[in-house]
Length: 470
Image (cartoon, rainbow, N blue to C red; front, side, top):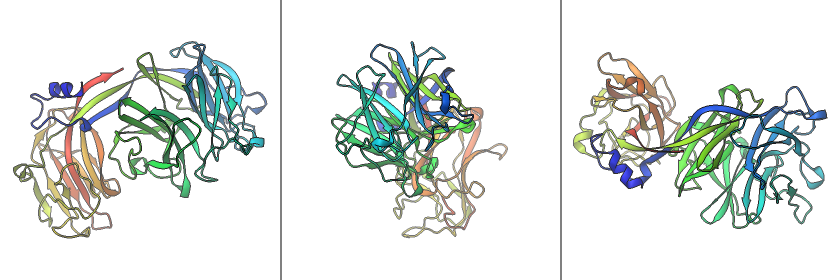
């Protein structure tokens, strides 16, 4: 299917060869209006004026009723203040599901810190419902026959904690995905004060592998809360999307990464970055062929759902940087850079093409020359499509180190982006609908002699839609 769609998309659009399947980007798109399914509940004696429903799970019980369990924080429970409350809805598309009361509290007798319950996730497998949840320090499990009443799995030591990245690291936010013939459990924690997405695998949901880091850093950051609520879905066979949240509330942000390797979505780089969504704690639900996105309300007073689609795009290079005659059309218009392009291998650049612009690179040198300043410009071209992608890395200095889109008629800078804080190329999406039809140039600017005072540019790609999946 992919190959035939790609060939249909190509003729008469841009010059170049048909892209490989690996060049396809699949973007999530929220469609239509949100509907609120859960409001801030009455917790009886535990109710407080500051409580908030946060991380949650949605699934369908054995009788067909939809279940929603949310971690309620800042209650009067004590300890870490958190517990699980549940709601039930007849249909996924119905608003205002019925509150069904407190579903679970931490049990200190089983080693669970008081008020430490966080972020359940539920799947159905082999006739049972399996819930993974955090107790603040460990990841724990419970099972249910009907998908409503769950029984904790208690280990031989009388505790529920199955594994941890260490005490005080706030192991939390699990999500279960079955792929490659085994279960994958993704979760977050912040050892050494840095937020990571971890993964462990299991054939039976009982015995788990050692943990591996599958996402960290990049444009989404590396603070303790940069990998909140990691949610992974397999949107096509062998194509995985990771949703990781950086902020809650009115300024909510979730970064989305895609990968064909479920064990690497970008470790201190942005090679898999596709977009951000203005939501927090997303959960993707597939029901009867339709995707839905559940997320927190912006005021953190409930949970909402909207329809979700995935738009597949292919990246087609605007400039063929492989051809010497094409590279020769770029010019160093300021500064002492010997030439626009390099094939430097002094760092882990991982460029999309062997030749790229690197304003700290000198032929045969194995060190960065940040003392060089330079401005490089592309040949003129027309913005023909609404969306583009740039391969950029290097220093973060929006005033002195950046790539810019420049109007050739007026000289005005229409758009610009800076580096990502390392040399590994990342993807920067550019939505240029408002500039369509303009004659423009790309300008690569390095006006800094400070450490990391350089920019790397590895290509500009038009993003062409292939298909839309409900």
